[in-house]
Image (cartoon, rainbow, N blue to C red):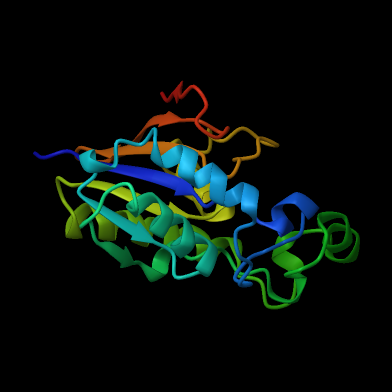
Length: 197
């Protein structure tokens, strides 16, 4: 049975990340620091070792993927719709304190993607990747909330710990060999990977 490797890379920083605003599906570009983050990450990712690069359709993820691919000329970038961030409905653009005071739970924000929907989407994405790209090394550029769900799915809810923020330009590794498991996660940009169970 061939082994499939999935690298989940969170896009670079945006101004809304600094402000702690809900981004969701809003189109917010990388800021200058975010661009520099991804450029630095590109120097550490050994991009030639990845078979393909997938990206969320949102601009900040596509921009991050394009920066990464500058270090690997000729490698193709494919847009994968299931890598899109969780929608937060009318809460998009709100400060975390504002939406929390107004709605209490993300689930209660009008128009937000439900927990059950994003959990199912995470499962569908993992199944799609393991069958469509079996045996490949896949680098997928996505978003904080979705990556959290994917990590939680493969670690039985153990990773990431409650309250642990996944920083921009962080990389997390999953492996499929019969089933998906967590190889390593690094909540900080280019941080030392913490071995998964």
